[in-house]
Amino acid sequence: MTSHPRAAIILGAGKGTRMKSALPKVLHEIANRPMVGHVQAAVDALGADRTVVVVGPGMDNVAAAVAPAQIATQERQAGTADAVMAALPALEGFNEGTVLILFGDTPFIEVATLERMVAACEEGAAVVVLGFEPEDPTGYGRLVQESDGSLQAIVEHKDATHKQREIGVCNSGVMALDAKLALPLLDEIGNENASAEYYLTDIVGIARDKGYHCAVAMAAEDEVLGVNSRADLARAERIWQDKRRLEAMVNGATLRDPASVWFSYDTVIGRDVIVEQSVYFGPGVRVADDVIIHAFSHLQGAVVESGAMVGPYARLREGTVLSEGAKVGNFVETKKTTVGAGAKVNHLTYLGDAQVGAKSNIGAGTITCNYDGFNKSPTIIGEGAFIGSNSALVAPVEVGAGAIVGAGSVITGNVEDNALAIARGKQVEKSGAASVFREKAKAIKEAKAQEKNN
Image (tube, helix red, strand yellow):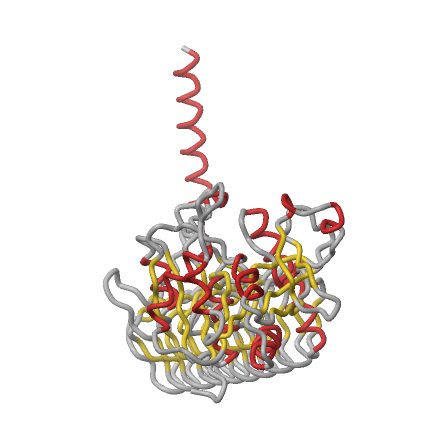
């Protein structure tokens, strides 16, 4: 543990009834990561020695999502202080340092903000409350401060005087507690209120009564955005995407239409990358420098190396690797496939469980038949091979380096290096047969019409 130990309690027991969902609120995703996962990532980056996630009864899916974090169950769900109390057994022995109290549905908390809160505790504050200044403070609790900036009280909007309602600094709910001074105060929080709940905000008054110093740290309004509805979720997604788009451009990528490009939480984009309109990056995508991704492409779990070109209308699925200078074009789908350096897969093709050698050319309409209904099998295509249009490569199969597969072939056996493989029916031509066919078909149609009229 560090000289100033840090622990985090993430509250995630809320049912989120306004979400109208069977899925716990904190598991709803922003940028393809559960909200609680965003909070957990910030805590991990802070270097917390312990992390406890508080869940409600039966929330096994939340526990699975946050593993290996410790789990505490809030059985009675009687307020925020009750939730924190449920986590304390998991923090047994944590008697020195700072305990952060965070919310699993407030996903944008930044590491720098947590560092400031920890620093305030280390400088002598028993309680640090994270404040923000919303455009419209209506409904938020106000942070009443002394002339020196220390926190005097948290006053709920409904209980605030007219003068207190003029205060612009509001309570986000996020706190940091000195483990030695403030944690013991949780036992003194009562539930003598209309809701019979234990409110964590009461800890400020209790700490002040004992002469302890309470402090305020500040954050931007977007950083402490809480998600309580589908509309909030959509707003949060938009905020996250806008920030990530700007970050990509600042770091040297060109987004032709930033608003139509969608990133995931772990997308990596290099310099001098051009991303055209309506491109979607699912989880697990890494794009190196000097790549062009044309419009309407969808990438997930793929690696695109320097100088490669994707799309338009391409779909790169999990396990795809495009090597340097490779090209995957219009309406091409790949999965668990490595496309070698300089290879071209230009049109209307599916490649699954395949290895495509460097500088090979895969013709339009080619597919690898990698699934027999029970098992997947690989297709290996050597360097410099040429696969003719509308070919089917029935796996497991290997096409050697420099080999040519004739258009329209169904390849079921291995092809040697530099060989020409043709596997299609022989063309047969019957002179005048088309005219005979048309006359017969016309006569049948006329007979049916006559019969109907009679």
